[in-house]
Image (cartoon, rainbow over all chains, first blue to last red; front, side, top):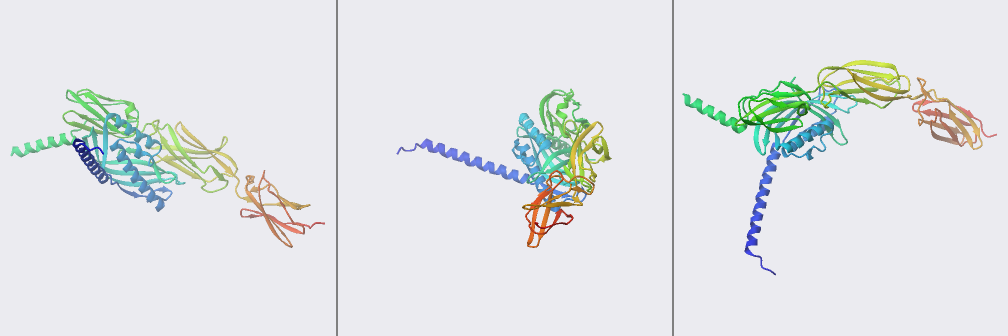
Length: 181
Length: 287
């Protein structure tokens, strides 16, 4: 059996130190993302017409809308389109993918922090195949260029949202920011 | 007295440069999707311009004192946009791009097949979109029409609210293809609904003895409005004789349901389809 040279052991130790420090930093980053990515959503369906929203449907929309915004936050912060698979379809998906691709090209990223959404259902189709929601969203938006924050602002935004039921979830088909009317 | 003010001013400047939030940039109040826009700048020297919006994340160098030109390509998507010009400090401005005029209608119609004479059986929902697929929220009137060939059956103008217009109506009296049309200015969307006969009405049967039993059949089966009931609708024949009862289901083919049943003695045959009962038929036993 060949003896292990002392320099090799020192190398190994250094490598292990680097790996453990990286793992620690990754854990910190993930936990800080988890803390930031808590998305508060409230849904009011009492004004939905012409069809009333069943409580089970309401719960599904609430769950899937929250998940959709968590996915948006992940996608535009980490500049990856993967989180957009599932919660989005059609135009909304195309637009968000374009956003990610455009950010990858320019080296920018966005962070949506401390999100809070007040959703109101304003239209629920007679056959239940589409619902229109109005979202008053509050969050802090941070724009970074190559990791350096160039803009940080607390905003109140208004969105018009179209959601349709998929096989096992509600998906966002249109997500359009509008001026406050 | 002046020192605290000076300290405040220095702190404010420092805070602004760290956070990147600074004075307003003069941006357009709102822009129509796909149109060009300009942002004037003041000062001199080089700066970095950022445009952050839906589907857009642009960064390029600009010369201060010159206008920044935003191309229609960058402003196709309705939503909020943030413009930033950064040199020593950043100047920001936000504006909205609003949808252009409608160029298509997303039109959902239900159901694709409906029995005649049903109340509130057909419904349609229309969403107007511009050429860039932005939802058009500006007030507009969508006209819904139902027609058979060139003959209009129904027409109703509906004011779109929040970018959606909808209608609901009863199905017509006659079976056949109905065109459902939504139109907004020169934009039209067409869908088709197949109206089919409703439940059978006045079921009548005839029959005769044959060597192996009895052969029974319906007269052409119609609904109460006179439409021929579609093929495949099930008619149940029941034959009762002294030693028992037998039942057979037969689908309607070309308007008529037909069945052969084993029976040797005097037999009473009846028929039913859905909730409708037919006449009873007595057929004598084998001679």
